[in-house]
Length: 333
Image (tube, rainbow, N blue to C red; front, side, top):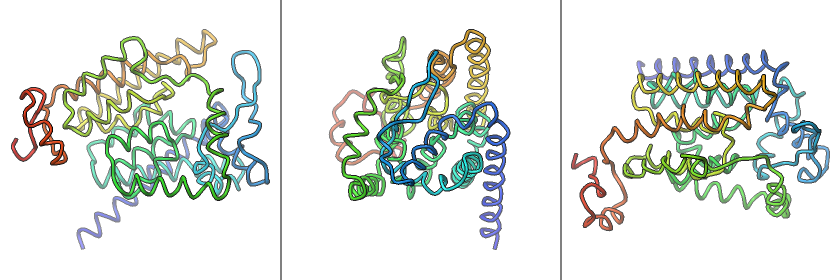
């Protein structure tokens, strides 16, 4: 009975967080106009109307001119958005944000309640404001049964899969990708062609000072260290939302609050500096993200011992490595 009561409380709390996130996206829509989700919605509607979603694009202001921005995501993303695209943009955005936030909230409350401060961090708030997939990607790392959905956002989804591979994630994701070839066999080629016109999405290790993130590999036995390193190696928009999975690095409520605080300060700083200068914060926040999200995460990881369970084959491979590199299993610790 107590277990059922706890589960019910968790579900209601998760729904509450989801509704609050949806309300935020609705309240800020006049300022954001749906941002990223608006593009998902446009291309999904285009496909539902019988058109090729990888041809043409939604008009977007870039610098001083309007450009047609093509669809930059794999076909499974289109299928996932299609049910929401049957609604007008605003209710579709609110429902999308509420659903993804509810799933993430349930995952956090069920598995790691000390990470609740993440819902106040810039990573989550920016994802809510622009309507991004990163809350769902973070949820896949906490609920392995959802791992196959990582293909919906392939850049950080790849990092999440490499950091915490599961059979359901690898096989399920592959089946989903292959299955969509039946619907539109040409989409992989068209998608890759569209990526050539994607705005700047650097891998953090190629930014000034970003290579230092790789020192986290010294704690390679720890899953959060592997996540940090793989995240640093994939292309991403350096505007907090794509970095939301890094809120798995904190292992205490205090650490989670620290990462949330540094990210909020950096988000406020980039808005105050870039907007008056006529620059888009989404494409001018790279140093802010490195300093406020990646740097604290690296420090947290390095403060921990290099210990954790790994595959027996890997244990044999590192058996004769120096102790400082080999680390130790959690059992031995």
